[in-house]
Structures are given as structure tokens and as C-alpha cells.
Image (cartoon, rainbow, N blue to C red; front, side, top):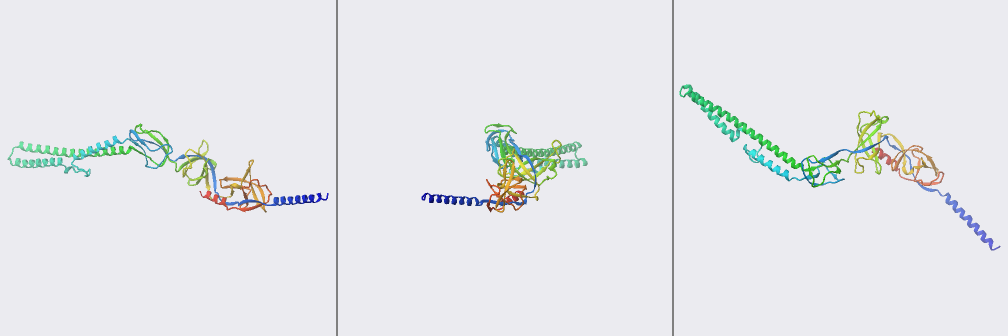
Length: 404
């Protein structure tokens, strides 16, 4: 019995010591990260849904017939304005240019123009007209001489009549010479136009992009004979995109051109900012909505045809309370946060508004300056906490969103 007594006392002491350590551990405050709720300019917005569409869309086609020799793009290819997309075989059109050039050279030679001279010509300086003018001048002198001799009775009247007729014939031939030269000049002008048409057709064998965009669909293959106007591919412009939405009549009065728009799409990690550019002049009688369009700059993250959610900022000066989104807890449809009050966690029901990955607007339940727990996990209300405050990221993020 004497030996058992010290052992029993030792066990009692050990048990008492272990209980003390558990009590100390239970009383130790739980370390948590916190942030201050901030009041920032969030702006008043109208939330709508809509569709993104290409700002420009075109079916690129051949202008001249021929066999497709080269096709430089395919589905999804990005192109710049003026980039050569395809090439129709140019040999036939190059020969037509040479043919037109030869015809123009011949026409210019017929009016006395050499290589490199201007197309404008003075008919009076051409050989044909100068020759007719010399004959006419001789006939005029002969007529005047005959008139004087006939008046003196030195020649018969028939000779005077013959001189008069010769003058009229020379005058007619001079006029014919002028008309002929003008006709040749007109022919040379026509040949010049024919050459320009041939050169344009040769240039049109290269099919160029009318605007910068992305190939949506390829419609032809190398080696095919393409008729004039045959489609080669569909091209869409993706920057900027055209956002089209319908605003309910109750919100239509607050929407105006120039207001900011924030667009988000499913699966896209960030928002895109744009501006209301066009509004319908009427409210639809069928469904009582106002059709609006906005231009959304795109860096490639958005695609035409996507269904998106948008916020139209109708008043950028409206202020609101924001907290980090990681501080909001949602359970069974209820939203709550944990506040730090006198070193303890206090559960508080809230009503959340707009939300992004970084920040959440709190409509009620939290005041500016309240200290909220970030990533509360399994924290319980009333539990002692030791807080370390984070930098005010939600305010900065919300301000940046309002600026956008």
C-alpha cells in the first residue's frame, strides 16, 4: 500500500497538469486576416443582358474571273487591312495590259504623239491639219485673184466660178482634217481608258482585306475556277465589338449615349469596359424596351455571338460599401460576414449587391470602417480572434471598376 500511494499521487498530478494545458490552448485567440469595409464610388448601374456582334462583317469575293492560284488564310486567321488574302492567276490579265498598251501607243502615233508626251494635242499643229490648211490658203488666194481678174474682165466668169468651188472644197477638207484629228484624239483617250481598265483588272487578281479582322469561314480552295463575284471567305471585325441589349422601359430614361458599360461573359475572367454609342429613337411597343448599342474594345478575350451580362453606369458618383469577396459567406441562401468586435468574431447577416472576384458591394449589415474577417473558414461567432489587418484592396478594386 505504501508503494502504491506515490504512484497514485503522480498520476493525479499528471492529470491535473494535462488539463491545464488544454485550458490554455482553448483560451488562445485564433489568428485571422481582416480588412476594413470601405465606402467608395461604385456608381448606379442598370443591369442588362445582351449579345456581342462583330462590328463589321463582309463576304470577301473575287472581282475578276479566273483560277484561284493562292489562298493565304484559313479559318481563324487574323488579317490586317489591305493584306493580300488570295490571288487569282494573273497571266491573262497581264497580257491584256500589254495589248491595251500597244493599242494606246498606236493611237497616240496617229495624232503625232511620241512616247512620254502629254495626251493633250493641238489639232492645228498636226501634219494632216497643216496640209489641209495650206490647201485652203492656196484656194483662198486663187479665189481672191480670180475675183479681181473677173472684175477687170480679164477672165471668164466660169474661171471665177471654178476658183470659188475649189475654195469651198478646200475649206470642207480642212474641216474634215480637224474632225479626223479630234476623232483620233478621242480614240487615244479611249485606248487610255482601256489600258486603265486592264491594269485595274490585273490589280484585282489580288484580293485584299477590306478591314482588319478574323476569318470566320473559308469558302473556296486553291485550283477552283472562280466566277466574278464568287465568295472566297467571310471576314469579321472583332475589335471593337458591338454590344446590343434591350433596356426595360422603367430604366430607359436614365440611359444616355456616352455612358460607361461593363461587360462580363461566361468563362471570361475579367470585365471589359465600353461606351454606349447608339440608342433607338423609340420604345418598342411589342415588349416595351429600348434597344441600345455599345462599342466594346476587345483584346481577343471576347467572341462575336457571345451572350453577356452588362452594367450600364448611369451615375458614376454614387457611393457604396465594399468588402473583399473572400469575406462573404453564403450558406443555405443566407449571406453573412464575421466582424471583429472586442477581440471576438461576431456573425452578421448582410445583403450583398454587385460582386466581382475582388470585391462585393454590401447594401446592408456592414458600415464603413467595420473590420471583417477574410476567409473565415469554420470560424464560430463568439470565438476569440487575433486579427492582422490587410491592405484596403476592396476599396482600390471598387474604385478601379467605377473608373472603368
